Image 1: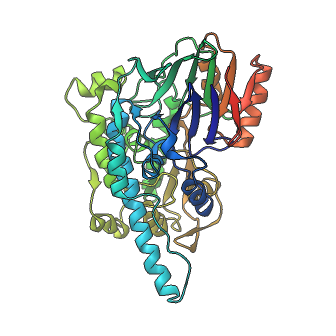
Image 2: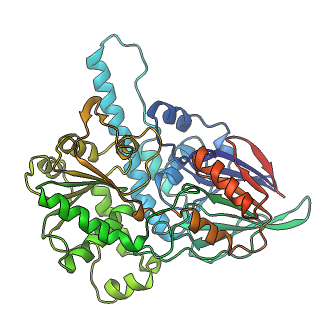
Image 3: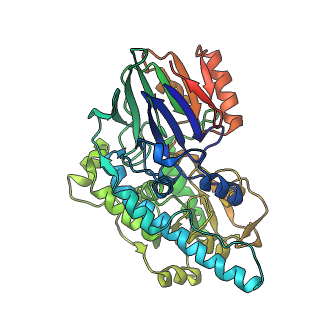
Length: 470
C-alpha cells in the first residue's frame, strides 16, 4: 500500500490523503485549503491527479477543511462512493451547499467590482471552485454508515468508523487491509481531527482496535489547552466584565460545533443566573440549520447531555433571549444595536461571512470584546486578531483593534499534547506513526517530544511525498 498526502501535510487545512492498494485509489478526506486567499485558491483549483481514477472517498467529518473539496472532485470526474457516518452525511447536506452558494455569490461580487474598477481589464473573472449544482451532485454519492459497523470499501479493504469526539458525527477511520500481491494483512488508522475528553455535548474519543500504522493529527502537538472545566467560568467573567462597561461580546465561531458548544454553555450560565438576561444572537443561517441536525442525532451525545436535555425533552440550543437571525435585514439591524449583547457569527476564522460586518462595526470600540474560541489558521484575519495586531484590514480597509481581545482555547475541539499522548498510550500494536494536520513548528517540536517518550518511528508527512506501507 502507498500513502500520499496532498493536503494537511506540514499545514493544518486541506486534509487530503490518498491510499493506493490492490490497484485501487481511496482518499481519506478531501478538504478545502483555507488561509491566504490567492495561495489557497491555487491549491484548491489544481488537482495533481485524475479525479476520474479515484475509486472511493472515506470522510472523517464535515468540517470544510476535510469535506469542502468533494464537490470539486466530483466536478472533475469522480463517480465513486463517499462513505461517512450518518451525522456527517446530514451535516454535509448543509455545509457543502452553503460553501457552493458563498462561492457563487463571491464570484458575482468580484465580477461587478472588477467591471467598475476597470472596464478594459482583461483579467479573467474569478470563477467559483464549484457550483450549487456540483454540490447537489456530490451529495448523491454519500453513503451513511454507523459507528463500529464494518463495511467493504474495495476488494481487500474493510473499514469501521469510531467516534473521534471532535464534532457531531466525527470519526476515526480504521482499516483492515489485505494486500493480494504480497498476501500481507495489516491495519491502518486515521484519527481525522481528534477531540478531547470531557467536552460538552459529545461523547469522548473511542479507543481504536489494535492498529499497526497510525496517521494522527497534530494541530496542538506542542501546546496545552486550558481545562474545559474552567471554560464556563471564563465565559461568565468575560461577559459580565464587558456588560459592566456597556459593550458587546463578538464571537467568531464555526457554524458547525463551536457555535452549538458556546450556546450550550451560555444556556447553562443563563439557567443558573450567572450572566445578565441580555440578548444573545446567533447570526448565521447555516448555524440554525446545523443546530437542527444536532437535535436529530442524539446517538452522538454524551450521557450528561442526553440525560439533562434529550430525555427531558428540552432543547440545549434554545433558551431565554437566544435569537437565531436568518435574513440579511436582521443581521444588518445588529449593527445599530446600542446595548450590551452577545453576537455569535461565522465564519470561524473571520475570512468571510457576516462576522466581517460585526468586526468592522465593533472592533474599534474599547467597550467591546472580541472572543476567540477556535483555531485560526495562518494569514487569516482571525489569526491576526488573536495575535493582537494593532491594525487589521477588514474589507480592504484598516481598522484599529481597540476592543478587548480574549482568547479562550478551553473550547478547542482539538486534542492538545497531553490528550494526544494519552490517546497514543491506548493504541496497541503500533509500528509506525505518521503526523499530519499541523503547522511545521508544532510538528517538529511534537516529534522531538514523541521520540524522547519512546516513539521512535515517527514520520512528518511531506506534501505530495509517497510512503510505502508496510
